[in-house]
Length: 321
Length: 184
Image 1 (cartoon, rainbow over the protein chains, first blue to last red):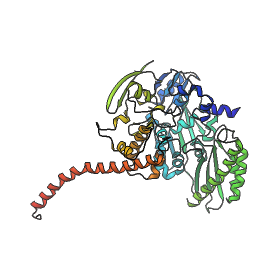
Image 2 (cartoon, each protein chain N blue to C red):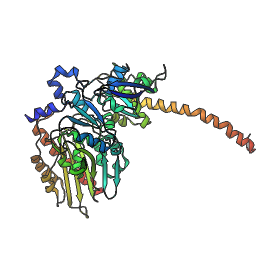
Image 3 (cartoon, chains in turn cyan, blue):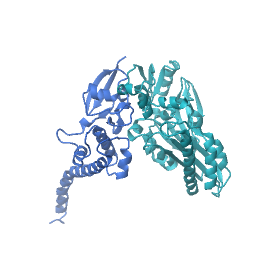
Image 4 (cartoon, helix red, strand yellow):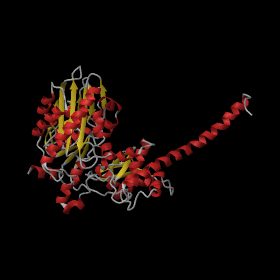
């Protein structure tokens, strides 16, 4: 069953510990040996990657999920390629034409505390404030979080709503992938062997745009049962919805974009009834699985309710913008 | 294959050859014998193992020691000045902010990094900062009060440190006024 394997996959879930108490005491350290290779430049990292085969390596940035997965014996790579030393990828830049660029080594905390991000894309700062804990945010990277591709992780929905793209580099080549196509399945991404994700690009927001994100989790900083981000762009008179983008996470095998629900909002005056209609449509687009935290039906209902609330707030922000 | 690790802990440099799989908390506890840094959970969710790397609180159980190569680490052992406890430690004692004490070293290290960054925090800011720390016996209210108290103590300590410099300035001022004939 997909749900079962999913909970087994996520090493920090209480479910996992409950099921396998016998080895719990032994899971505080990494037991399998690996070869450690550290890169200092992007070229060096890509060189190292090209020397190794498909499945025998893992790329390590902050390692806030990878180290835990290794401690829990879920993966045992032969090589760890450490890119934390790639200081040329540790940046957050804003340009009035090209928008925001977040390098692969920018930590969650640097995104949260960046003044330019708070001014131009405040939704990202609000999202970061509830990602795990401060200690994790201080060492873990945003791009690393996306590469881990937990279906309930927080950065994906706002990035999908903001129409972000990710740059994936391999030796001598670069390609770009939309945020909604980056994750392909549970803990799987579009990044192929020999490639690393190097950058997130977020376009400049058009005028009259509001974005909001919220998640529902059992504890502050925990993974979401469901999370929703909505972007609404109003026309020049601030009456009709010119563009809408909806990103969801925690309610399927990967973060997804609710395209049909977006179509419900586009070209109309947004009211609470219209948002409720969009929520009903979005409920048909998602595929949550039952778990100890809640049943599939509960999560589907939750995603709809969140969409209504988040849409209302995004609309208010668009009217003020 | 063992790799070389150069690490500065609480101001002293150390040099080890370690297996790459070694976590930072293992270096601190097992190799350096500093048992103040605790490891309570196995899933990076309790923050009892918090140490400070170059001014930032991080979980030492989730970081490979080799990633900290060449960096400066501060643990709970590095806070007290001889037998004089650090103001945050003293505030934790005076405010009854721990019972069993297992999570306390992590709480204090996180509070230290936080107060260095934000010397005058509100109750809500402390709550947001400390949300990753799990205490199962004292209760988080007393910890929050201890950190507010520690902030006051640190401010008065820093103010007291600045006093001697002001005293030195005063005679000079008098001397100037005496020269210009406006004094006395």
